[in-house]
Image (cartoon, rainbow, N blue to C red):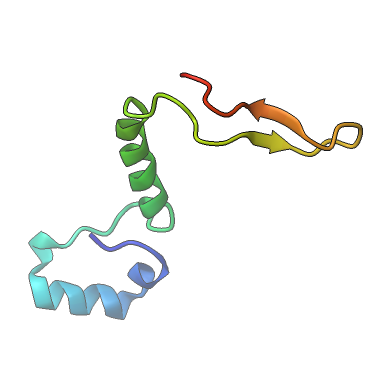
Length: 76
């Protein structure tokens, strides 16, 4: 499977097809998103394995410099 910017270069596509055979090469329909989509799919599988968070997750607001969104050891 070809992904990323270089997968859109016709010469790269041709050379890879020559090396591996056209029937074995797939050019992702959205090559710039393929890695991110794959990471999201893997992350979904890991979600059930996480029961608690290991640190606080905060955002900084103008009137509250440390507004906690998710607190340490919250169970999900």
